[in-house]
Image (cartoon, rainbow, N blue to C red; front, top):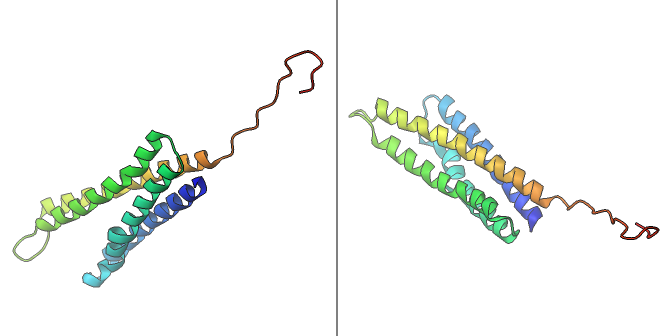
Length: 149
């Protein structure tokens, strides 16, 4: 199960990396219609949450230490926070439907939270890899002189 923890954590990190690519697609698409958001939305609202849940579940099933399980659960909360930040940013628009300066500032927090989430997932993946490493062999020390080691 520890290998599954590493694999799922890796997939979560890849999905987060793709999320930044998909955000750039939205940013560079002119004009940015609703279709520009499709990949970013599907990945952020479906793929990442499922992988975050699987990461936390695999950490528990791998019998990871409690702190690591807690760290593996943290991306679930950060994903939830991402959705809240996005909704809040969209709530601050002017009469023409453009985001206000406050809405743009809140949208910037969406990016910052994404960066935090990536750092958490990197920590989870590093710890999962460490947990998956085989224990070092312990050399047998002779108890009596002349006893084979």
